[in-house]
Image 1 (cartoon, rainbow, N blue to C red):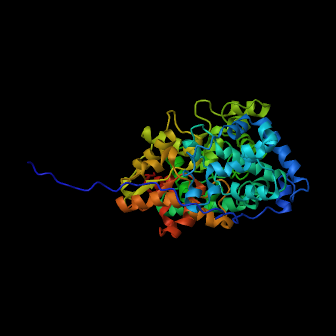
Image 2: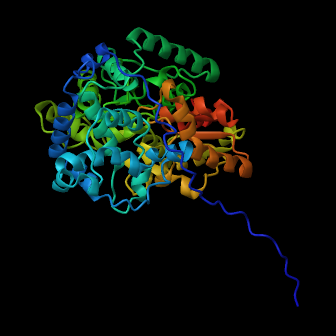
Length: 507
């Protein structure tokens, strides 16, 4: 009998649904927006006296305008496929953070007031009255959802629970029960042009500093222009790129790419923000108003092309909504949009993601790299939710997964993906998206990051990974904050164009 080497099979990763802890996160609430913040956005300053009537009227309005919302509220059969797919449930164990239970907070009210069965036999169909207790639950748990849509990937009926969360938040704003973090940031964009309230002088000073730093590091005069009329490209990037770490390293990389390509480009102070928190609160009006700043800026500067920097939900808004919101891409038909279309270059994709732009240059041999410059990094890649599940890149399916990885492999020698069930369309949220990235929700953020940290730990143990790249400003900020809670260094996260910046050859 031939000798047979006997070895034990490798351990399996067994997904275990955590034991339930009802009410574990019931007391977790983000700060309420004050009267001024609310009024600046056109919402009631405080909870209105007839809030119940206003809330039901708003729900009726949304059901009338959004057929998908009613379909999502009607079609759930409580099969349970989504229950263990939410990172917040896995991290908090609170059953109301199961996607099906969180959305039933609204579904039960919908049945009570908008279905015959709910009006006649409420207890038989799980219908319940809209009470102050219910409204408080909406506020608590709809701001414990990052609208990442991972649960929707596993729903056999395709229910987009993020749309229900957005509707819940829109109703809350309508009755004067808005969140401080999101609404305050939207107000800053309207007043100054970006989420962080950075004035033009601060932006100009930062960009001048970057030019000096890059010149000192490389000996090459790379420009970081602001408000430059006649530039070919307008770059719309998250305001965190202007000063936050590690975000600014990607901004440095964008500039080096444009320099190497010999393309004139500019940033803009009036539209110095790619992020659009109007989507987070479910407000079409705010979504469009913020996006219009970009069209106005592009018309003013006379650019031919609009490129979006590393920001997850910003790319979803640009990819999915800019065309009908403001006419960037085909769709909008108002006179300004029609004029806008004549100005933009029809031979290139509008808008373009910076990764699409860089990858196209790499494929055409227009960029050269010293991959060894990144040899001190063993890299993995975190797919950001809104890019992975809400948009695309390139001309082929799954380009949003392949293009960032192709860039990384072009500029670095050591890359390892995390477990297949945690990447691409099944990626786990960082835990800080969708209006959760505020310190008053830090407990939720840290617990919600658990599944991604588990997957990261696995590639750290197996391959020695020491750098996690991502193309989302919120992911970068969230990971910088929560990595130390899981015994990782906060410097472990960075951008794809941070890697490009390290390896690119300039002349």
